[in-house]
Amino acid sequence: MAPSDTFAEFVTARSPRLQRTAYLLTHDWAQAEDLLQTALVRAWSAWGRIHGDPERYVRRILVNVYASWWRRRWRHVEQPTAQLPEQAAVDHMSQVDRRDEVWQALGRLPRRQRAVLVLRYFEDMTEAQIADAMSISVGTVKSQAKKALEKLRLDRSLTLEALHR
Image (cartoon, rainbow, N blue to C red; front, side, top):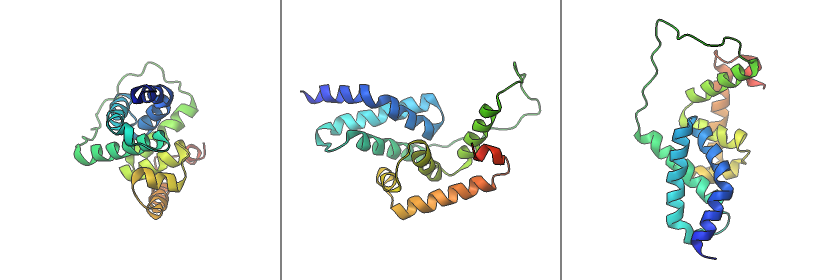
């Protein structure tokens, strides 16, 4: 089988999972698509040199590209306004509200801490796998996770209920 065939099969089979990881890192579907495409382009150029699980390799590329994006890009901060926009429906499910609280709190974490939590709790990766994916030590993974969880516990905008759901 030609390398292009195996790459196409890999993309077809693994893209949904990798797309989810990209979304969890960026919290924006458009950026997640760009992130995944960039990672897949880099993986294609190295496809013949990849030994073992290619998803692990591509996930590492994904995390590295994400890290390089936030190092280079300036992110503007949303400014509060005096008037709230009109809302079509005011009755939201409490679960959606709690999930939104957690997402906003994750967004306030430093990017490395957010990446560690996303990979650990949303992608169910071990500390060793996270360390490998992010090119950091296992000790750094543990300390970043600890700091991130402490910040979430101290975040006054999060309700206790939101943290335990």
